[in-house]
Image 1: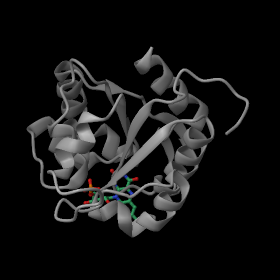
Image 2: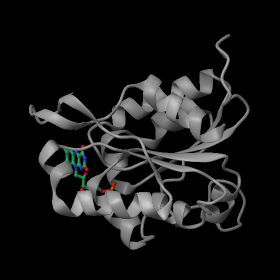
Image 3: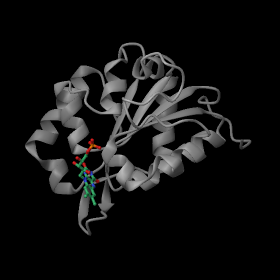
Image 4: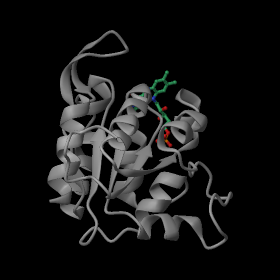
Length: 189
Ligand SMILES: Cc1cc2nc3c(=O)[nH]c(=O)nc-3n(C[C@H](O)[C@H](O)[C@H](O)COP(=O)(O)O)c2cc1C
């Protein structure tokens, strides 16, 4: 653990990972949170496991990764309920265009949206860090879903503008680690 002080120390944070190119940055975020003394549980969609393996997150968090709703990683109680109940906050990072749509409608057919379905947003903050190509971000459906999700009580960590993996420049880039940690600290305090 670092000597750096954080209000997140000793807190239980869920990190939801959906299948965007920025998944590799989530690995560094998990490491940073662990160094701050945070208990981190990682939940992944199947698409996310194509970008970064659960093994990476297991190693960094020192805990089992919930990457299938059909597999028990701890005990035999329904996993998504148990995981959601222990959380002080959850951050979905990166949050894909697809995940935004699922959450806006209420689908629960992947581990991330399923865990979120069992969280009461009035008690436990759920933050979404959308990250995608600028055209995807500007789609009317994406903008509409962002508005709906804000009204539903989700907290958005707005994407930044800059270089994108698809070699475009524009809005949709995942904010840096400090911004993501700050957003969690604000949500917890
Ligand atoms: C190489 C590659 C990079 C992708 N990057 C992104 C991304 O940054 N953001 C995004 O919203 N979707 C991205 N996608 C599309 C998602 O992976 C796709 O919509 C997937 O179904 C998302 O599933 P999930 O939301 O269940 O994780 C990418 C796809 C590929 C093949």
